[in-house]
Length: 140
Image (cartoon, rainbow, N blue to C red; front, side, top):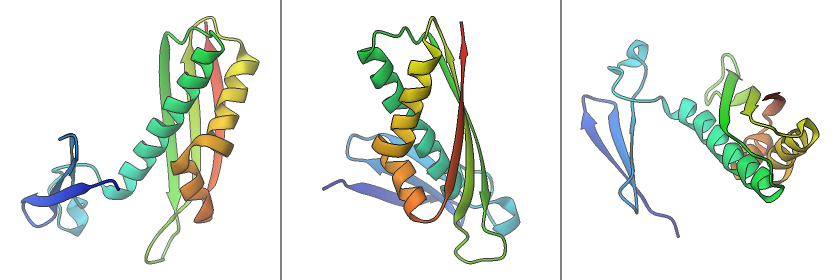
């Protein structure tokens, strides 16, 4: 079982989350709803988790195929359901930018496998009805 501890440490909505290994993340609400920009918004953190999860998958797959990933950047945009509570992510667009002498078809397949098979965060979002679209760019 995974254990996470979350404690309020700043103002009304500034929380710090700590995992069992002692890694910490700061979260806060937006200033419009009473936060003070102490940390990341929790829903944005979900998109960060999507990027991290898929990034780990993609690098792992490409390493097994002996593809040299010398740089990797992930750009994510998301749109939430308007006028609903809770307001879920309804659409997410991802651009994977890989640098190195990487076969573009292997990069595309690695991205597809991550989003459609291996990434638990992507599966969680998709199960909730989110449409995830992605593109991959290989820069030599």
